[in-house]
Image (cartoon, rainbow, N blue to C red; front, side, top):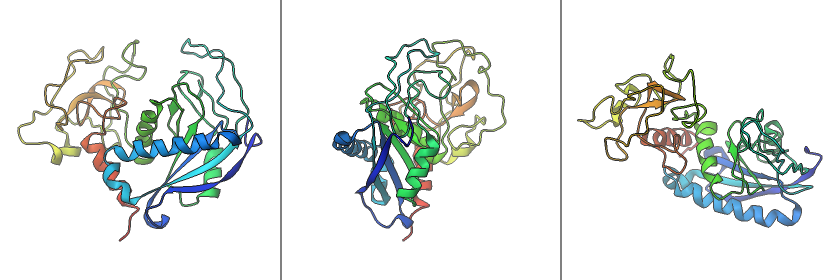
Length: 295
């Protein structure tokens, strides 16, 4: 279950907006696709491009983003699905021979939906095929919902997994923080995450400053700061927003802690899959993508 279990076929530029030296270059490769399944992979990459360029701010950045499809074949279809996982779920025990060794319940086996690959092998393969790459995705030929971040963002063929890919892109390419209020989710006890210990997080979209100094220029006059505070740090705050959607302020609860740290908006793709990126995240993405552009 490694690079011996398949081969690199070739590269196709599916979105060409100019020379790689002055564009943001995304590579989407696959794992768990046999030769006869490569047309399915190509169609899924096209679908992902549509999803990407529908999401702000990529809707206005599409003119400076290239997308390359790196076709890789595997001996078998799918991804490893271990029988047991620490989250209590069960799999079918599948262990297909795939080029990048995709597996559910990866990264130490804490969660079934954590879909991982051999990231070092992915980056080495991409660096040879598309040396000027800036961001890498791995799309795995498995229907189960799953994905992960890291050096390459990984997502399965489940229709909703593309949202995982966009969220993980926020981490991998742009250094955005998770805006969750808990490390293990709000449905389970989460000791040690009542209050953020400091210091100030080195992320553009979370802060320990209730005056929201990092993004104060985006806060409209009259917006209360903090805008929303957590009444009970021992549990997640599930109350609705006190202000209209899209209002930039300081909302307590982010970076895996329920108090002492703030996010820019009530909701964001870095907090809830399916939500749009907040204004602060959109600005950071634009800033970083445009660094690659000349002329």
